[in-house]
Length: 203
Length: 203
Image (cartoon, rainbow over all chains, first blue to last red; front, side):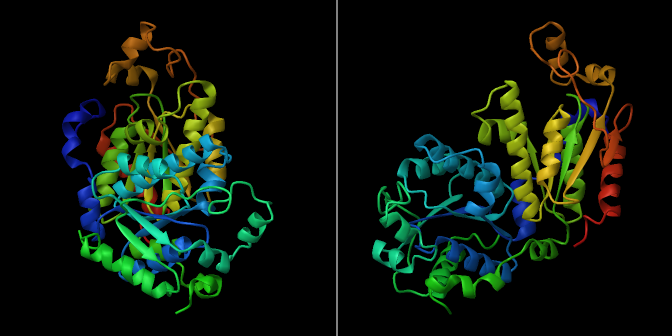
């Protein structure tokens, strides 16, 4: 075997490629970018879909506020620039996971089209699935799991998406999952079926 | 199955945990943090070790200048603050991959102890393996695969580690891989044996 100085000759062919990782995992890496209002069901769907895929032996990972805002993006605030940088970094990390062959879910409101489109642009063709988790403001506010809408209505949360800040609906998402009056099970089935049909669940 | 509003009751137990991902992969997620001078052999070892592990069915990923500096950290320069932030972000991404169950190699000079120690601190016990890829300056400069040392000697690269900027050797690394006059094969065998012995290659 070669010594270090001749590495370019020796090792290039032996590299582990994305293809070989995907073959090993029996799946195609991709980023399922869940976008929608607070309370629309993004995290619930991510957790349930991950479980469904795991039961089928697939390797998944969820990027969400819990593991991003306290870690990688802990030095970002909520200014327009920081919100944009927040989404940019998440996109770059999702791209790395996708390259590793993992099926990644991202669960962020990500209300601005330009931010989401920028993520799409950095990803390879077919690697980015924009999934609009659609629920009316009424539905989301009715759920109000974290009591955020109540606070936002009282003016206690500035620039709250849907109340005092805009949500820009996707114009051409890969999938719309409408959660109005629908069970988690149905939404997850729709999403998994889409992944299956598009070939992400086999290598 | 529950509707979205009762998600906290329904889904918590069903979450995919790190343990279940590791069981599925037959390995323990960890970050193998390769540190050392330019030309010491970090990338060569990462690529060859990854191949060796892949041949054993393990899932690995390499974070290096190629996929980090042009992506996630493309908005960072080379000021002291930016260099530190560079390492911080890499550490946070490595932590996410480790949590996903992946065996991650990071291949960066990472010359400062404080930066490396900060990464160690954010990681769980046993998740961070500092691997000092040790080669004398003479050895590295003799290899000079990219011609960087020649440029640095001519003063064309400011603050080049080992020439005009310090490299702080690890004080208590998990492993020292000495590449002076040693084949890649030997170095990789030492590293893989360490991983095996410490239980990272089974779940």
